[in-house]
Length: 149
View 1 (cartoon, one colour):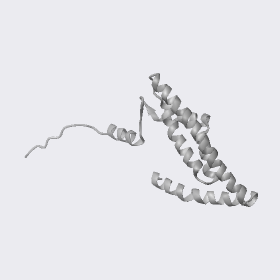
View 2 (cartoon, rainbow, N blue to C red):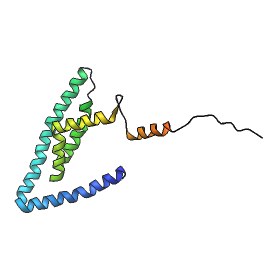
View 3 (cartoon, helix red, strand yellow):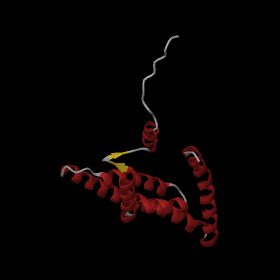
View 4 (tube, rainbow, N blue to C red):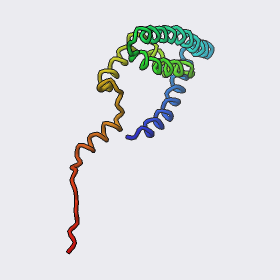
């Protein structure tokens, strides 16, 4: 599947999952507690995002001051943004993924995976460039001269 198709399916399926979960939880605990939980998770997520974002920014600055590359922080920053956006989105399904992005240990493991598997010789390589390199390896260079008869 192409990336666009995956994103389209994500935006199509997630709202249905969210509505289903909101209705199910609302039926079990009631309307007002459900609304309170959605608002509470958004507020808690904003508070956690502020704390984790500030801590990541401080580590980023410290690494730069020491002359080190802040690789983990450069990956954790966008993860924090995605987590914060998911937490501000009303619903329980997106909140679960949003909180997962804000857990420091899990975020560090994901950043470590990205660095170990997608960092080549100090440069982040996109799949496009890796595919181009494979294609170039199949090319045989030579000269051509047409003899005139």
